[in-house]
Length: 438
Image (spheres, helix red, strand yellow):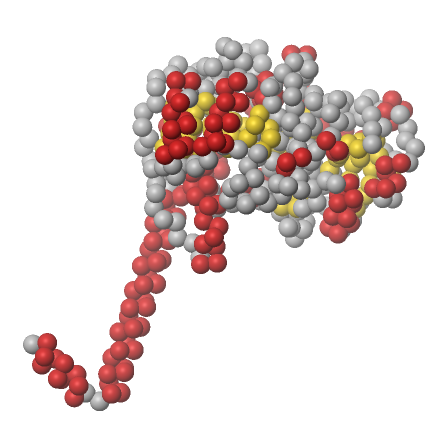
């Protein structure tokens, strides 16, 4: 039969053979395109879709009510996301356990979520198992389809998939109402837990606050007031790197969770929706993750120089209020404070010009904590002016969706040469320009 077919084909004109071959090639190409499209759709469902069951965790007595004295959630999951860095996981877990105050175990149970099925990392986590509330294992090992030009960035896709899965488990399966998210390359300050316990009521009381972060992007020694670990700021730039969110926010975010670059996604105006995070003057987290999917981007120039707060007792959280950090109180004072300061023509002038004392400046009794030292303002009216001034000050000069790191109402503050310097947009300010991006 096959021999007869071959003889028949040989008798056909070569043009016919070429046409038939071309048609078969075309059909095959269409089939491959449809197959790839189907795989991409299945992958999108894997990332965006329904919950995946996880192994049962040890029974816990979890309360979801707020503490009547502090207003903070009574039980907050501390979610550590890990993959294939055993030494980093060892270091991070050790710090999370070391700095958790005695008696706070039920208030801040630690859960590890593991991706990658990495045996060395599994071994490290197993050594801590008796001190953990549970270990989750992300079960989806399917290859993630990406465009060829993004194949080398596949790690960002895996991280985003892991984040969504792990947060779904914490909020939708284990029913926590709040979580602190940490990655496996973070050190934490001795007062890390007290910091979040103090600030967490803002997430409940003020709908304009959508996260509490332990991180200051401009937290280098040359840019902070190390004597003010009790100073906290509002920022419209999502900091990450040790951050707290409520279940209600996750229910909103998961509906549009991205396939990759989850942190930049949270910085989009349509996602942020005018809300702010709270950040510290002195960081409560420090990243040692030079090795990772970002290949050390920004690490040597900025991240390795961030100062980690090193005390557990110098901030009297029990004596501090929160009202000044609500949008109503903060915004009522912030603009008047910044634009009432002396104006310097350049960073060089801002560092040397004579300034009124803080008491002379604070004749309007500002209560948001930014005028305890002499202060000055530098103005910018373009992206290039901001970048030039930030580089001269040594602060981060990049933008995400038009928002500078640590920015609030376009203003970035740093502390240098014994004075607070506000890098502020010229008035009138009409909001962030999303085209200002890096």
